[in-house]
Length: 360
Image 1 (cartoon, rainbow, N blue to C red):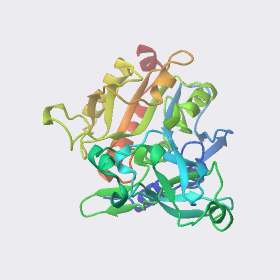
Image 2: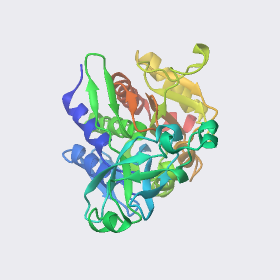
Image 3: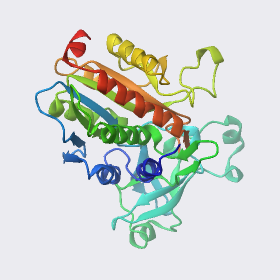
């Protein structure tokens, strides 16, 4: 059964406007959701550190990480006709951009509506029409309805360096357990981390648990590089909203299927997750009758690569909630997979102790 409190947290997180470097709204939503049971710190990168009040300070540290940023845009310049040239914050699925409705922040903090515009087909030359290619970002603009650069600046309050995000509301189809929204990479992971912290808050554990909502993952895992040196974990679980592969490719190769539970990856382009911890996590799922699926990925990257390669090399795994169409303006995921991720993370945290961690 869906927990309405948890659903409200997911909605608040995914509707928060927080592309890389501008994570403030997502951080504020997270703080609000745990203010009754946790203590917090923030740094100037907007990393949020979440402390379980039952921590003792003399146990191995389990770091729970999820990145709070989403892929977005930043205003590069204002053209004479009032449209906005923009750059990507993170790597977008380019063919989803033309026609996407967006929100652009202005100098007063108001979010102005706009749309990403490409050259209309009516004005394409025969050569351009024949090419039939996805237009590059350099050929796209954000149109806010202004008629000149002066109007964009004065009447709309737009200035360079301001962020923009898709104008995609959160929706939940309870009858079919389907969630629609933006930024599920990694706001659905943030929601899973938050609920894990809540469920672990009163438990007696053999580890101290510190949650981190890390900034700027989509532009090079920058926030986590700072956070890992502050938290100094002995072991880590990295939550992700990871690309579901169940609508593409051959059935035999599908490893991230919706409603099959979290995906635990052995490797991707950035990391080989600690194989002993990986096996422990999958065995814990099996022992507890919990859903989980494993994958080997040719591409991708995540904060586990940073955590596992810093300090003493804390064993790290990735628990990804399957999300269809990440790095696009309209994503799809399920409450079932979010809930299964929380349950498995809690089971792992309960099972860990100093001797087990040393065995990894």
